[in-house]
Image 1 (cartoon, rainbow, N blue to C red):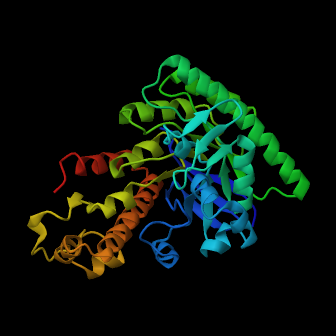
Image 2 (image 1 turned 180 degrees about the vertical axis):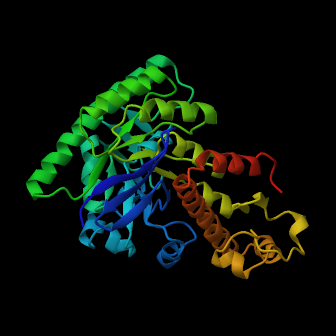
Length: 378
């Protein structure tokens, strides 16, 4: 099975329903990708992910490079075999993780020199090195190294980051294609990442520059890091208006449940976020009725499932009272059950979005989703 992407349906606003084919399975889009930073989605086994219907998950180049090391993963048969995952894998380049190491990194045109958060050892991550690591990991989709900056950012900082991101993308593309030619195959799809902060003209400029490099897919990066949701949507729309219709579009690091349909309406096909798993570990449950803060005393005797409208295995079996008890007792099972439900909720929300698109009801579904989350958590 080779790579392909086909659009099955579009709507007048620009939303798309499609099918992404990879060597490790076919994914219906728009899709939400659970984040498995260190080759594991925290709190879930691969069996559980398969039960939930996750066709593609995300892993992190920075973390896997530092531990256990890409050379070891390659020696052990690649990331799919190493983590015993049958579905598709996307690896990010590590750019955002390095960006978050504000006091441990120095960025130059060559790349990013940083100190490991694990042991303080010094490393240099270049565009070529990011490609090399991801080829060793053997992911299905690999991201180029980009420069992510803080929001809000002065224009001159955004311009410099855009220029560097394009130069790095060119180097990464050349290195990747040379490796593919040397090996007689293109084992991955490599995506470019559009930057430009919150400046519409810079976003358009970045997109047009990356189009010249002919990536099979494009990501919108550097958003959802503090700017208002309306700006995230606006910048996304600026980019997707210029991207090729026949290639997948990935909005990185989003989002809250009530925002997912908004991004789909802007022409996004792929999304990822740590929120469903992170929130679960902090006792925040996403439901069809809004957020539930399960540690609240009101749930001590609550015999209802977490979400009365959910069919996941957790909601079919356990009560709110029991889950609250597990969190109060500090039991590991609390995070496991909450994570299972939250990931199911995100994946099922995307299924409902695809279904709403099929019936031409995306705008109605998006409005209903936002309405459920306008009130504060229970």
